[in-house]
Image 1 (cartoon, one colour):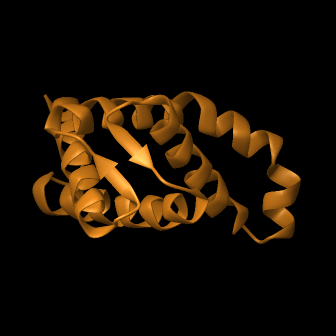
Image 2: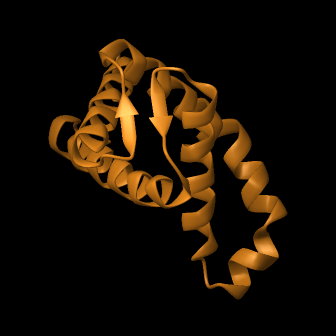
Length: 114
């Protein structure tokens, strides 16, 4: 049940990002649900491998390269889905940051602390 609520909150966060940023579009709530699922899968499976492969660069940049990795995963999800579009890398950077902030805020407001 908790996983379903987090999934819906992430979809709402994507809709908020699309509303705020003209370079990011989400076609519908259904598209937002699919995009949230894909982003969750990419963040669970692909992102840890990317972090491991780019660890020296992340250390040299004092962790700032993680922002680039977040943006690349966000941009990649936008490029493989039809209902979720990210217009470019810089929109992906801003979108990934806002998406993280909004989904974190929604989760802290609506989910009980564990």
